[in-house]
Length: 63
Image 1 (cartoon, rainbow, N blue to C red):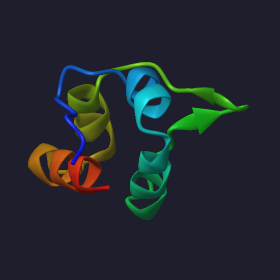
Image 2 (cartoon, rainbow, N blue to C red):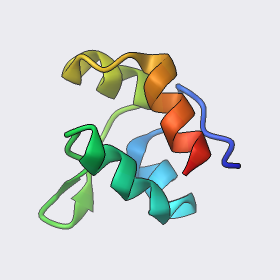
Image 3 (cartoon, one colour):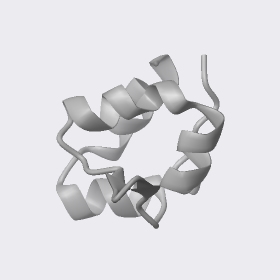
């Protein structure tokens, strides 16, 4: 199980846990632009895309 928290950046998560890309894709959250990770924390990203933070964290940590 991964140890992803709400204050981690997308870049940090993708570097440590590349398998999490599938979670972002499944939830229709862009995580890469032109091959580079988007900036911002998981909390900010969840708010921006209207995804429940607890759901996103659970899915990322299970991947």
